[in-house]
Image 1 (cartoon, rainbow, N blue to C red):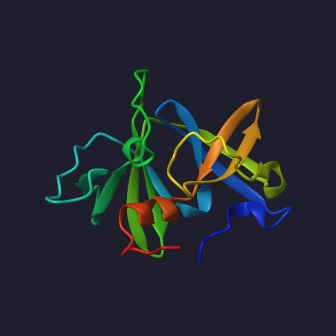
Image 2: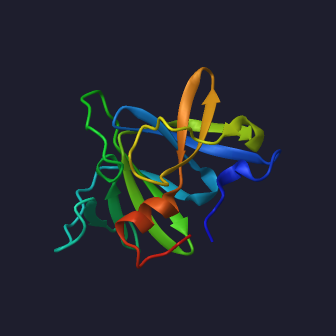
Length: 159
């Protein structure tokens, strides 16, 4: 079942983690996030893996595959000061990391403040953006990690 991001319910409280990838502000629902780690370990390459998979890391006692979010969203890698981070999602007991340029903060809001995405999107990846949050004069494109994972490997259906 595809998660209908926050749009179906009008007044549910939600927390959005804002991060940057390719110079653009994106967000994940905080409920999908297990932890945020510094991106200080080079991932071990996986032979014959999808080009957007950087490899795997083992920060503690579990292995995390790493997705390059800039590459998976088909964005240009822009040159600006980055504090690269790893956002580890935990969906259906599966840990998958998203390599992002920086983590900006967490916003508490309601679903009434999130609108459906229009035609002009920051990425051409179909189904990646499920909502738009405008807060403090800043537009945050909300991503659905399940759709991003499914786009890279349809055999792993977390939706």
